[in-house]
Image (cartoon, rainbow, N blue to C red; front, top):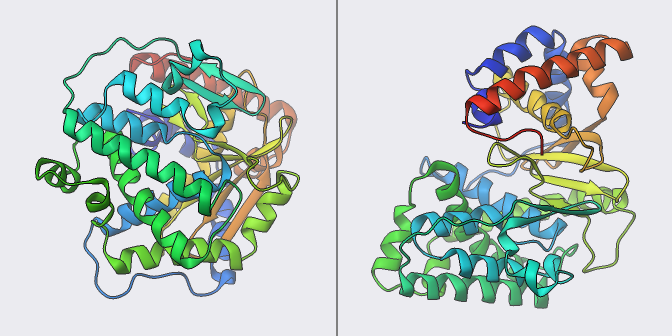
Length: 367
């Protein structure tokens, strides 16, 4: 399972219901922020059911690229699962991203096993799993990854929102990478990509799979990030780094293969953990409650303070609304009590329950 899965009917969902009696007040603030932001970005006309996850995943990838010039770790793992890359090829591709430029040759050879934190690296060690790889598919994926990196360097280095034409190109690559990430998350090979690869499709043909309306919608989501001045606010939290310098860390790992966040924005001493949501409808308080619990629990899982999380937040991408809280005050809001002793007691109880759950699910905790 995962933390996300646990919050959908698992032991930790029940723990949160019992432990955070003031959840609905926090949910109300999220809903109010969306309403104040104005009309959301919507798709053009009728869309297929998979449209929402496709666009949400692609926007999440584009947001990550804006923040951190890091490898698309989950997408690379999805390619490995599908037999479209070997571990060695994935390590080499990961090491080619700007975030890994500082690594020596020995560590670069394990690029996929290394994850950046605000002030260092996490090393998940060697991976010896072997899978059958389709050489033709691997060549296509390597071409896609190399062309995408070159395109980003030329048109939208980290910290830069490009013009609509360049963003449309980035959206197509992000769509393919998000589909590969979906393979890693679900364990199911994306048939749209698989069909294209079986037919001898090229990287360009894979990038042509998303429709023009879907691409236009992804471009609009990026533009909303700019026009709502959220990008400017996030850059400020990162102390206004120069173009090409990261705003933080994408896909921070709190528990390997069990709890990965979306982005950390900030500095080596203080970050804001932000989860990105691309829903339109905010009428389901139970769903929003899970979001609210999840961002706090991610931070609480960082028992060694590797990620320097001092604030948490939600970015409602279709509304252009960013809602953030200081970490300790946020925990107090959910509890309905700011007493420091109660906060610490609740956190200890969570870590006790979470440790049991993670170990029962075959995970390792803490890092």
